[in-house]
Length: 402
Image (cartoon, rainbow, N blue to C red; front, top):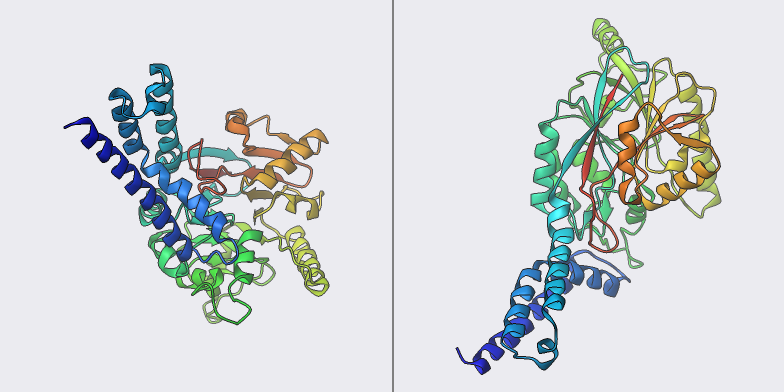
């Protein structure tokens, strides 16, 4: 092959790669329904799909540099070329490989339970433009199904610019063989409010709440539910009940009611923070939180609180014994609040869980903390937001609560 032919091949291939990145990113941007953020989402997706082409760009760079086809590249030294190839490899790894290296981390927490309870905690799923591909969800579901856990707890942050067909994108979650409980984060609720345009046309075919119903996922919101050991999958109407009643649907089956009460290991409460501008809504939320706080304070069994935000701790009474266990995700705002609380000596790492100190790598404030109102477990997280890079492995935290 002559040099002009090689030059033509490299130029044509480069143009084809750029066209693929630009056009495919634009198509996926339309699929994500970004409303007024089209350019922002397109840039993020262009960076994401450019990572898939890094091996080809590396080969083209080596070919062009070794044959002196381009004056600019011919001036590069060998170390510079090797450094460029290394950066391409790192880019490919952090965008494509690392998000797929799902791992499990096991932790033990004391909550004075009558029977040990094992739960798997998933945080920051971020289903959307980066995550949520069928291969990602299949691996996640198969990993969950292989666990010997009593329940799956998801701390919110489900979405990150999802496709219009939420049910279709999340349908693989229906294959989970364990009961799943979740709350919504502020960003999830924002997608709910963005579901219609000014003309009343839907941007998403399904809301997240309706998707939970289809997938048999128990959305506990600002409610409490019993959390028995080895509980079977059931519908929301069967599982989400008021702590003060704990009634069964069959009033004639008294023995079955007593059996369910005796099998109670802990009470699971959702503590969902919603940010709205309406004064009436804020007042209603404050009333709901006050009622929920009273319910938690009067609970006769240990309480596990599933929350989307770390600052939920400020609304809990400090006199509860045993202290509840608050489970939340590791979003950036949560990490900042933890650092601020540590400076003010309001929160500290659990000295008994020294193995969790390793989880602070990469600046992530993860692990078990002690607070006057509760124990706090900050889960590592799975998904990606912002730029598509991920420097640490996505993690499912498996908690053995005793």
